[in-house]
Structure formats: C-alpha cells, structure tokens
Length: 139
Image 1 (spheres, one colour):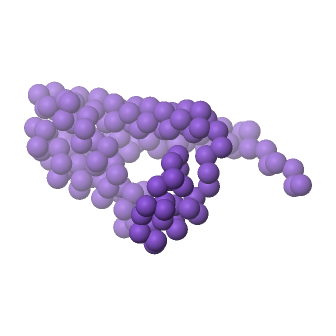
Image 2 (cartoon, one colour; image 1 turned 90 degrees about the vertical axis):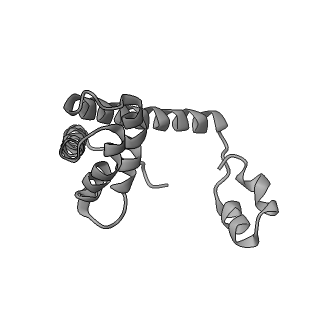
Image 3 (cartoon, rainbow, N blue to C red; image 1 turned 90 degrees about the horizontal axis):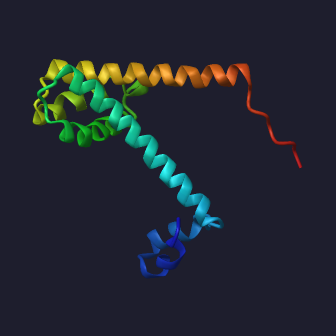
C-alpha cells in the first residue's frame, strides 16, 4: 500500500508488477486510522490471551506470554482445520512452555480464548441478524 508504487520499479519484475497492481491509497489519514485500529484490536486479543493464560499459570512469564499468544493465534489461520481447532492448541502447547506454562494449562488457555472469541462473534452475528447491513443502491 502506501509507497508500494514508488518502490515497485526498483524490485524484480514479478514482485514489482504485483505492487503496481495494488490500489493507490487516496486517503492516507483514513488508512493510518484503520491500521491503528487493527493493531489495537490485535493488542486487545493478545491481552485477553495473556489474562486467560496467566490466570491458569500465575507464575509464568507474563510478557513472554503476551508476545507468544499472537504467534499461537496466527497458527489457527493455517488452512488445515475448521476454525483452527487443534492447530491453535498445538501451537499454544508448543510455544507456551518456554514461558513457564505447562502443556495442559496452555491447551486450556487456548480453548478459553477460543470460547471468548466465539462469544464475541456471536454478539456480532446477533447484531447482524437483528439489524442487517443495508446494501448500497445499484447505480
């Protein structure tokens, strides 16, 4: 995005052509606000994971857990399971022992985080069901 068109000529053709095909950012302030909002949302998810895991393993290294939770959650996006179930838990069990969290607590923290995300998503689904998004008129 921002600046991609400027660096495209300096890159190999295959990468440069992909960057040139990206849409230009016409409102950088709005793009910046959207990026900050996305980072804040991811930070809140990491904080929620940190709270859930440190509640299960109070003697664990809190800052390291805060750093590892997003990595474990990223594993859930691998296209090998429905909703990342199993993949996320395996990632938590593999990563969090380095922060002093036992594997059972790591798996439980992952499942608790999944539950919290499902409850949050259910509220969004309920809001869409009660007040469906309006479609823009065809022009």
